[in-house]
Length: 634
Image 1 (cartoon, helix red, strand yellow):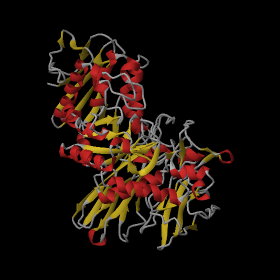
Image 2 (cartoon, one colour):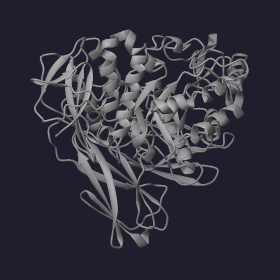
Image 3 (tube, one colour):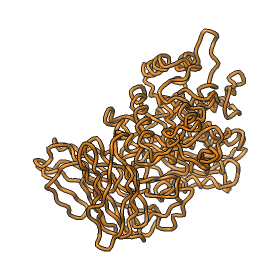
């Protein structure tokens, strides 16, 4: 972190009735910072250097090292909820993830602040980035840092600092430039090592774990299965109408083969917990119970099992920012119960007006300075993590980032391949370190919409992809690419049918994890509610089937393959072209968002058979593109 930024400090795995006391035991000579007396407090350094913070907890005393950079290296940000930032601490040594034992510490409230692509002017220089790799070399383990300036930024000499996590024990190691070396006989238990690149700003940290056998685990790399992941979002109460003798979840089970045959292998369900009867389900009244109107817990468990039998993953929509105002605890709060009064943030407590975002009338934001709130939600997370393969985390920007990091440690300790995906709009680069694996690419969505509406050139796609890294995401961060979800009006309604196929192809062929929102494949025009299967656009559905098949068959279209713009000839701003280069070859993707076919010239020689439709698209001066083609190079 940097001078002037704020870090939350909170005990991990809290026992709400116990006492937790924070203190600063070492600080730069000119610092006058003190900590509050509460169990959850905040550190705002006033001098650069190294601070040592202690947490006196019921089990023992924990120590935390905080590295603070000068204020001119601060990450420019908009304040998040509560008006404090603290985006950039690092696990174990900067107040983010804690120290050993059940009461480790957390730090860094985020909101939609630092690293947020749509809210932040990154300027020419962007933010430096770093990736750590490691290997065993003889009797040592060598960790190598790979620092980079932002794409298109002026080159600068980047320093790298390494830190051993405060929770781990490693007495013997050496640092030489971009290398960290440790003798294997000093590694009795796994040891986490963090690296930070420092230039005009500091980078999002990267973290690896050294194992006693010399293996090195890259902790910020998304689960292996995400390299083949494709997502189908279901608006649970509108996806399909159940028969008289069926539950809603039972009716969805009957449609799993349809989804799998469409080419999707991961299901994201909108919330399935007990709620206040709005069909979207985001106003939770019981965090421990599946909604009765859907079929209850046993039926949900059966749905997950049926999905797993089809080699499909299941994502649970995790809503932790707020409860419904109909929740029992909120009702107790407005009834005057002082215990539950403190569970919520208040905009006007005297008049029982809870704090919310966007003036939403049916919810109330939780008070994360209350250990009871954290305990209640952590226990719910632990329950549902046993059922599913990952969480899609709603309004992640509105929940303290260290709490998400605690959730990450909790879920990954049980299943290292458990997925955490954040809905943070605009996205926050610091949410990648020991926090989320995959991030909503709202920037790409917005740009594809603007292109489809004719408000931007199709070449804006390149700026959209580059912006991920300009704001500080490392190369290994995962992104969910989409053109529709339940929060946005349908793309076909906003941009017209002529642009849908180009936009969909873009979302399936740029680097990322592609998604279809249920009904998108049939031209559904209603954002939420009943899906009108009876009015399906069968030609569009066949196109999506061909698109997903193409994606499945061509590894070069997947997340790990190289992506680059290519030279093309067209006077139409709705046209663009790029290449994907993978182990199975190089492919050129040409998109045409305009209403009408275009002949597009390409500098590279290609085989003129479109891999999506199988049609020959050769033309005298290039290739004919109705909406989108994928062409192998010769």
